[in-house]
Length: 234
Image (cartoon, rainbow, N blue to C red; front, side):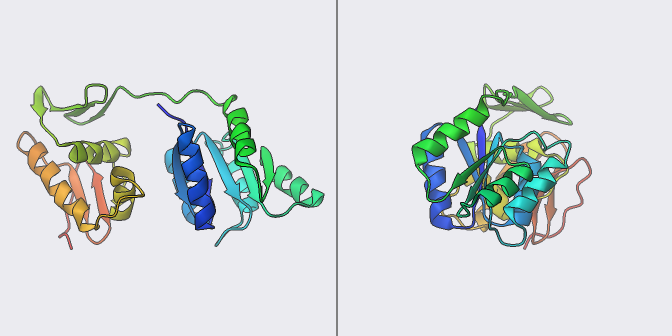
C-alpha cells in the first residue's frame, strides 16, 4: 500500500505540480485548498506526510499545524510547511507551531522530494487491509471479490470501488463530489449523476441476496448503514 501525501495549497498550479511530482515518486496524493476542509480530510485519511501552505483561506497553515499538534490522533503526522515567508522569525514561528520542516518558495522539487522521504523514514509503512466487512457483506481486497454470506456477488470495477469507499467509513455520509474524486479520480470529468447510476447498479447486485444497507441522503450523498432510512434521490 502506498504512502498518502496530503498537499494543502490554494495555488492550483503549484498544487497540481506537486501532485504530479509526488505521484511520479510512487505516492498517493490528496489535494485540499481550504483550511477547514483540509482539517476534516486529515482526520478522515490520516496521511503519512502533510505539505502545508502557510497562507490559506479560512484558517492559516500555522493554525492548522497547532490544531494537529493538539489532537492526540493526528499529532504525530509529519508536517512540511510551504511558504513565501523567508525571514528567520517566520521560520521559527512555523517550527514553533509544530512543523517538522520548512521550505521557502520558490523551492527545488528534488529537494522537496528528499525532505518528504526524510520525514517518511520515521513513519510506519502503511498497513494493507486484506478485507472489509459490514454485517453479511465481505470484500476480499486481494482477490477483488464481494460476498454476502457465502454467496459471491459479481460487481463491475466501478461498483467495487464505490462499495470499498463506503465500507472504509461505515455510517459516514460521503458526498457525491467526494465519491467522484475518490472513485473516478481528479483528472476525469464525469457528472455527479454518474454516482447515482452506479449506486443503483451496486444496490441491485447486493440486494438480490440480502437487505439494503446503502443509505441515500437527499442532495448530499450516500453511506453504508445498518438501518438506512433512504430519502428520495434528486
